[in-house]
Image (cartoon, rainbow over the protein chains, first blue to last red):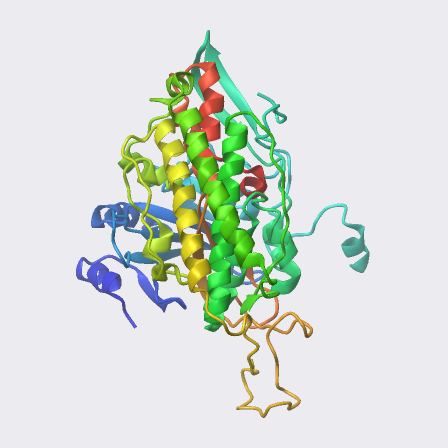
Length: 158
Length: 355
């Protein structure tokens, strides 16, 4: 099932995969990590000027990591804003995604948080360091295979 | 400027590079209050998680609760009775007033207090309004309106206040959109974007109120937007209290297992929704992004369910975290004393910035 944005991208020959719609009817697309920075600029020119939220999650333990971007077009006084959700899947061993800080500046802290919690490193981000955990922390806390250090109950269970 | 401040901004550390009195750069360091809320959410049911959410934004606790019950409600398509929706709107607007007042307090160097409610539930609210609450609410509204007018006369015409606040921390409309700001910060820069009007959630479209916005984009504009929002909130509360319908305040409905067919009442598989039985509210394997207009900005939850009691991913999009990103840009070329003004006008709560 293809949404309008997906059809527009196909018309311009851009590689992507449509993931259908999420539960509220927001179109979801999957973009490859190498193409992401060019498609981000194209989407910005298309009109999506507001990066609402950027998050990352673990698709399956031992599987891929996903980085999710919610984009909206903000205009004064409109009723139903256009929205789209972009997902970029990366392998667990070497997760690298181009940073879109230079397109939407609101990705600054959010990409740092995804790096901090899941280990996805964003290339070309000006200050990619840990933001919520202390700088000397080892490990990526929000991954499903993360073992909290000094958590004796879990350690004894192994 | 170390993690502790004398003026109740929470634990935020700012590394400021100075040249005499002028600020060259500023780097905020967060994480002092990080409690791992998102990781905890992956191992709790919604009802078990509700007490945690009041700890994010501890000045406007109703919004955190509202979004926490809204997200699963959208996921499972649960309808709320009208009365519960009106009660929620009243509580939300009261909470917005509380948050703005408590912002105003430290903004004028005072102290505030915190309230943890634990009042919202999926499908409605935990208990109905007690007798006589509505009359007290109306009395509070009148008393409050007089108080707001008094504050306005004291503060807005005060020349010292105006000099400290006017022209300080200017953001243009396009920059505000690019940096991802939301809430009063966006509306003070000329963009009329209020999720209560755009998204139309929770029966806000049945009341008559206007979006407060200003064009200037400096700290004075943000102050005026927040004061205006408080007055609009009073208007909404007065209308809601007059029009509140009778009826049930919670939706006890059957939720079936995915595989079974329609089950009979009182059958073995008949499952209720609500706080009284044991928690067995399953999240289906969908994902969605639910949002509300909190007093600080847009509070959002990105919820990925996976057919079990616990969410697979519960991502909190905190307004304070995203609004704080613009601080290094705003304080360039300002004096040292303006940093606190700008930080105050962004309205940060470290509980939700760090989670």
